Image 1 (cartoon, rainbow, N blue to C red):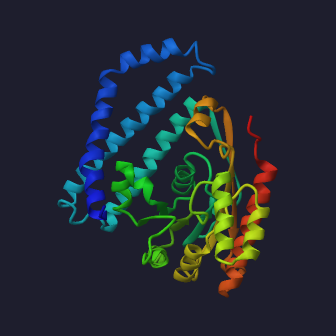
Image 2: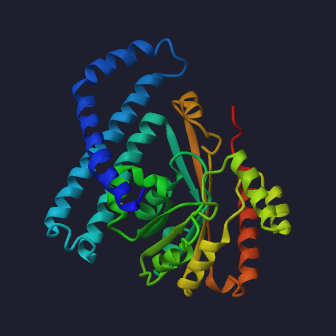
Length: 338
């Protein structure tokens, strides 16, 4: 299926379907509330079904409202003529920030979640572009990172995301209007993803943050095993051995990181680790944990540019060393699965 056809399917079928489902949910909400209230005393947990229902309603409502606002912005920009101008780009970043602030306040209230951060205070991060490299694990870590960068660090993220996230209509529209890239973690032959990543990391402003997840996907034991096997197939035994010693993260894929470092030669790096929800790997895990009543801990490290080696092989070794450090931090700070 061509990319143009896939985009048309997302925009003309999936997006209207989300709006219709949202309207149907609100029209029938009294029935849903009665049904979930009747089920809640039977199910384990504190009002688990009601909490899940409310999160679904909130998510769909945000999604629909965003799509309507995005349509209005497209019209106001001259039917898309100026939609990628600095003025409208700023409006889109403000829209994302406001949405994430409200959504996370509601999620913290409903799920009893807490977010604690440890690392450089935003005031100590200089007004210069930064490259942000984050581990990938647990539900919603991309959104938590975007929330932190926009709300706490006052940055405008340029993010590299998995192409499957483009099936979310609002994410699809917004991230095709601001600097971002949807990529496949397993690209087809001939796809030059490193050039796409380099283009995204080029020309960063003082308040920009280029964001990449070097692992290429959420951590699971199966993906960890496949990543190690892949390194061995490529003849990279030393990397495979180092990857086997890391038990909480996937072996980082250096291609995109190297491309970003080359494209932004003056940018410092922020390394980000987090733990708290990383043992929630399936929908069943999420359902079992509601309400979560947990703390998400985020750790940030600022790496000055002069501490990053210039040689390609040395940079790969530097990246692996940081991922080993992140793995050790997770081991020290993680909450064991129940």
